[in-house]
Length: 546
Image 1: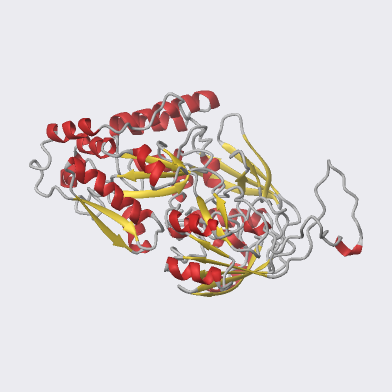
Image 2: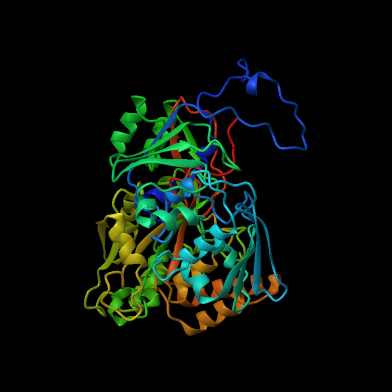
């Protein structure tokens, strides 16, 4: 920024604004009691309900990225605003209840039983039952899905059924505890409504059970939602949420200063800090954002320079990571990180260290690889999304580091759809695909409970196809299908070590703890909440408003 701190511009907006308060009362001005009565407070019980939502929250961003309502269409960024996932995770990044109040996995690891929360209603008043859950899971893992997580359920699917209205059972062919990640990405849709009206009608006016209700959408311009006051979990503090597309940073800032929007996003660090000095509030990320560089298709000779691991390592060793963190990121970052991992992540080995800055070693490796003379085209292309905040500036700085050691690169700016098409569409046997031999910056919050499926995609021939190493696939399968939890984590550390040490098709530049939003004076205090999956402009999550 998911987030620019996410896969696309919007991905860095994993905000928990469903619980933000507008014009919060001061210490001298007490909040009026609910219904005119002072409710009793029991410290061991849930806090009293909030007042009815009021007011309009206006948020601007450079792009909507995927304008998708349906989770099977890549990732439904808007969909996370008005739909609830089957399960979620909490502030400690442990899996937590959502539509499923609880669940259990059988001793042999083959049967998942989900106990569905009772009393949940869709926006049209229909009750949510296990039939809706099964309908949504079937839709999510259907052949029509190009959601990157769908195949992981499909590959290991045996059967699913509903023994009653509030129990959903899913059986797999082999043990695979990391499937919880996939279940946390499944959002629940209304079976009866969609089967009666059709998906086309639903996509133009989607309903689900989430904290926001869809009102209207204008492609490339704005989306409007209203608060769901009957949501079972989080009731927004605002009556209306409007998200605007404003590509130009200067225009976003001008709109904030004129009071036309309340929050602006994907603003450069320099401008964000300037605005902070002017009295605006910066809201930092809830967890570090990993800046990774990935190099797809490295096993093809047609990949050019990146087909040689010595060149790939030279790219890492020629970057002065600490200097970059101290200057460009104003001390809000630290060197390191691995693919969707940071210290404390599941499977993280404390002995792991970031690649060091070593100018002489980089030059030596390039000489061993006979770069540039050994390659017909020594120029390494970089593909960067238009409107991706500070990412283009960062890539220009990296281009400067690489130029100093003699590595030739070219920055290509493309729109988010083209970028995603190049990066996510499988091309296992096509060495002429445009992402082969290129560098893709991946800027994404490291908020996932584990990086298992991200890593299959990255290292084992998944949607990114950066590696086709049979031993990596062997190590991956050993870890994923290990029923013992402790051994599973140990095996996963070994897999990640192998991927980094022997394959080196990705490397971390920095972990950024930078602000993701600039907030105007009318918005009360709030923080980023738990990231509930691949949400971008979702504004749902754990309430943090004061």
